[in-house]
Amino acid sequence: MFFFDGIFAASQDAIHVTYLTLYVLALGATKAQIGLMSALGSLGAMLLLLPGAILAEKSPSRKWLVVLSGGGISRLMLLGFAVLPFFLSGESAVMAAIAMKVIMDAFSNLSMPAWTSLTADIVPLAWRGRYFGTRNMFMGIANMLVTFIAGQMIVHAATPLEGYQKVYLLALVLGISSTVFFASIRETQSSHVASQKGLEVYKPRVLLQGLKRDPNFVAFCISQMVWNFSVNIAGPFFSVYQVEVLNSTPAIIGIQSIIASVSGLPAQRLFGTLNDRWGPRKVLLLTGFLIPFMPFVWLLVRSPWHPTPINIWAGFMWAGYSLASFNFLLSISTQETRARYSALYQIAVTLSLAAGSAFGGFLVQHVGYPAIFISSGIGRFLSVFLVWRFVKSAQESPDAALPVLDQPEITTSVKEAETYQNGHEDI
Image 1 (cartoon, rainbow, N blue to C red):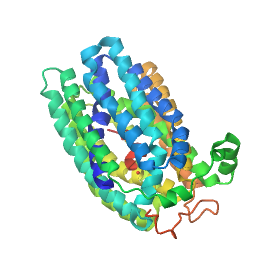
Image 2: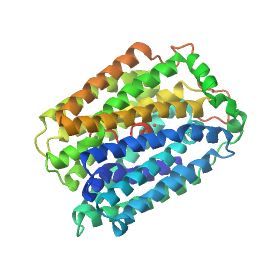
Image 3: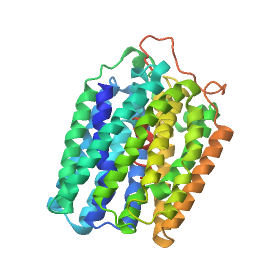
Image 4: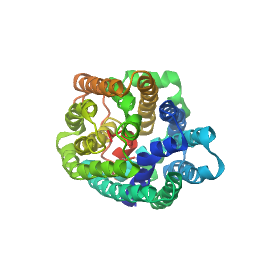
């Protein structure tokens, strides 16, 4: 059930992640508003992460918390995107789209701590890398097919807006299908209930004391804040650059996304195996060192098809990085701290994403695209250095939390690797 949930979720995201920026541009948005949309979406998501962690620990059912928030309210916004042009146009439509994006991200993140905690109970630790590698591979296939179909639907529609409305209705159907499969998962209850703590652990003083006792987790969060800040300096603007400078069509951008998805398919199996054999930290360092070169290559792009080699490399390397970062977070947390750590980690990430979007919007508006490409690449290299210098694997760090293995009920990425990096590839 978890496997098919991922496939339909990836199919939904193939539309929403690939085409949302283009849709909002078609509604009349400016580059500054695109940056604002990304920044506000990250901030809105951040506000609900700690409440989500509290609910994850206190709720009798993590599964239904995910179904109602991330699988329910969040996906209802897909219907809003589909019908928006019937009611609003111009500046009003743009602001409404931004508001729906904020709501969608917020409720998706409300469910994230529960999703992460439940995921660790579903997938056995011994073959977690291979499972997610295989799952992500099939998700990539689904993403590729739906991206192509959606691109053709947009191009062949009577008007671009009508095309976007049709594909968002398709995204709604795919999202509902994902929710149905996730709702069919058999949730493990005993291990979850045994780990529930009082609200005292979420008091600022107690949280800070816990973080002081786990410097490895703090170092990992800081490194990923630098990474995501740097990624989002340029991330929201690659599609805008393709449309405004390269004169790309939605169909071409969709094909480029498919190219990245195809490139990521063999990477999922390769990095899934390496994750189990080497550990996620080494995979994180390897892919993290090779990804930062990509923004610099964008400086050489001159036609709609020039990004093709970038997307081949990006699809391959991002598959490994996303998988490793998600598995590393699971490896340095225990069952008792997982929901809490997931929330704190995502707060750090979303704050940095929001700051990166705002900074990138300012740079691209006042300096130009080369500035965001160069800044993004330099920042990513800095993040990799921080991981290499300060972040240790769970086995190396005496303070890092080791996974619990002696309880039979525990069968332990963007959500997928998809949970933490989804939508930030260089495509």
